[in-house]
Length: 134
Ligand code: HEC
Image (cartoon, rainbow, N blue to C red):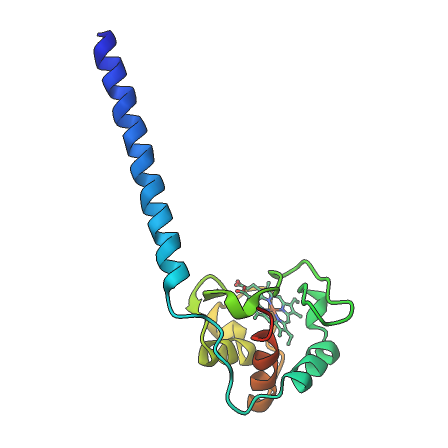
């Protein structure tokens, strides 16, 4: 009886180790995947920063380098150039980021980020700035 219980504990422990190993390898794979946040051809990051300030993105997001961008409604955008996923859903590529900025409601209907009516070049410049946050 005692031995069985010990065996059960050992098995459970090895299960936990297996889960930890899978989690670790997933983490490792994610770390070695394609580097998120490539540069955006033709983008103007200084203009993007200005737009972020004017549009008030900082009411909802913490955004390094933007004055008073300390909002806590959405996720913080620090290290955005190194994040793998946008909105828990899309791979963090320039195309996906620009699509998100242009119309977040089309991607995750009902989420708290409003459509900000951005033009294509505005989304591109904002994306360029966000990718400078490494
Ligand atoms: C009213 C609040 C609000 C405003 C204003 C807002 N956002 Fe968001 N934003 C959110 C929320 C909430 C999410 C998370 C949505 C989700 O994951 O479904 C989000 C998600 C994001 C993401 C994806 C972040 C991640 O880690 O997945 C980016 C990038 C982003 N917002 C940039 C901006 C920019 C740039 C502006 C200004 C043009 C802006 N947001 C304005 C609320 C806001």
